[in-house]
Image (cartoon, rainbow over all chains, first blue to last red; front, side):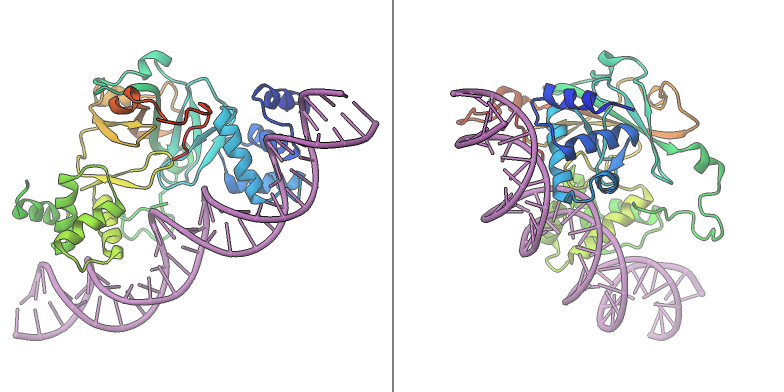
Length: 156
Length: 156
DNA sequence: AGCGTTCATTTGACTCGTTCAAGATTACGG
DNA sequence: CCGTAATCTTGAACGAGTCAAATGAACGCT
């Protein structure tokens, strides 16, 4: 668990003012990776009941802009945030239950940045998302009682 | 330009009824890759002025569900669709203007599916997005007249 | 420590992409 | 040609996120 001072230093290093909502958001994200804005809001309110949703949006944007947190938004999901930044890791996403897991980049930072042909683009980041089923969902039948049409799968 | 018959066959092969909106959407997507729902709607209405936006949403969902088109939605962008499917290609996205370009998978299909550790996940697809600046945007200054704070960069 | 400026937060309305629901239409097998 | 089920039209609703104005708090300076 991070000390408040530690989080404070992180904020100051990013030239951001140290406020309760910001400390709370950082603390929440350290404990609960890949949280949605809503989940962050809920968790923050357990510590600071009075924070507005707008404050959380602003804080998340400020932290994202300075690189303190990273924003990810897989297909059909709302925005999620994580504090693990700068290490070029990627994500495993379960198509069924939506859980997200971290994986380190298999081949290191550099090869990840090289598409086969860059078409004149100056690439600064390669984002990789592995889609599949998590251990639990691949073990369990997709839909438990009613196995009607296997074609339809929830859009969100 | 694809013949109507060709598109018809594609629909029938997917066990979908052949309707004007569906043919129109497919035709539009073949000409205009990475189109947003709105752009598809606009282009479809040039051919069929009466289609409802709901029809386009339904058609895109049906086509996506059967695999005839692929849905992509980069960070902060709305959903986009493309007809190029089944070839495991990836995307280059410009952070500045948002254009999307296709790139073939550098290393082939198989290695793309292998994260360093799968944590029990059954991975069936690896999605790669290369972020950077397109040729035009990397040549031109990001903001032309007012070069105030270089930190701020548009969220969308 | 106190003060003022500037940045953060609250409050509340609002936009936009997308989905839901009910009824009318149309494609397709027989 | 008919009946049925899928598809489309119409219109309303929803939720995530944003905008804007006013209040409040953090920090640098003296």
